[in-house]
Length: 296
Image 1 (tube, rainbow, N blue to C red):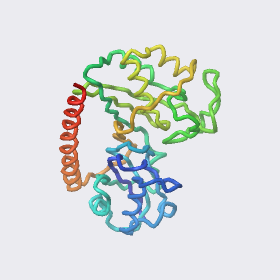
Image 2: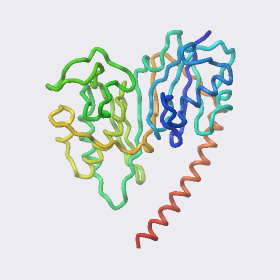
Image 3: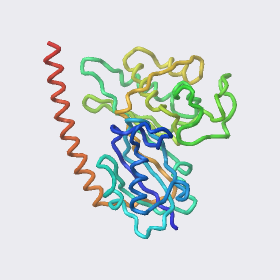
Image 4: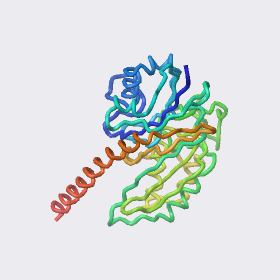
């Protein structure tokens, strides 16, 4: 048996999230991946292969570089082999052979998400104000106001050592909502503001709620002080998360793990994605033309 780590990418539009659900709610990324791995006799099941995944993206969220790890006795695992049995909107792109105790979730030292925030052409957005507000997020904070309600588990990795209180407010459940954001950056690109957020771990829907909060600052609905009040728990808000379709798990980093990219798989994946790009670019023009016609 040897330990394998795979970098997985996917378009999450047609899936009910990454993780297999206890109820049959529809297809998941993990469910499709398990089917391929079992049919190729790479693994038998989750338990016997010591399977782990770096994160659990929600319904409709995409990934450029999700990471999974497992034990296998198969002598020659390659991304292109796995891709042969995966749907076209899920793919493996790189492989590593980490130490036997490697865990894709626990051993991650950083996760990076990217959000594509569309800005209406006739609506002004104060990106300078958004940047100033985003600087408040950097560092260690209690992100209870940016977490899914009634979600007492940190989404990527539980920090058992942070149980207790912060800012006079009790932390719900046995899992802390205290985590550290390492970096937030944003840039204007055509009709979008691209927001990158890096942390070791995230709470469920945390990135999408942060994006919504920054958008409210940018539109003038709220200000920088409001974000500070949220972080210090001086106020409680149920922020509506930004739509899932704009979110991408861009990268997961590990110390001392080297992934080897499958160049053939990359070329096939790029060609396939280009077909989707052409389709959606055409559809964007079709829909814009329809909007213009009916808005007259």
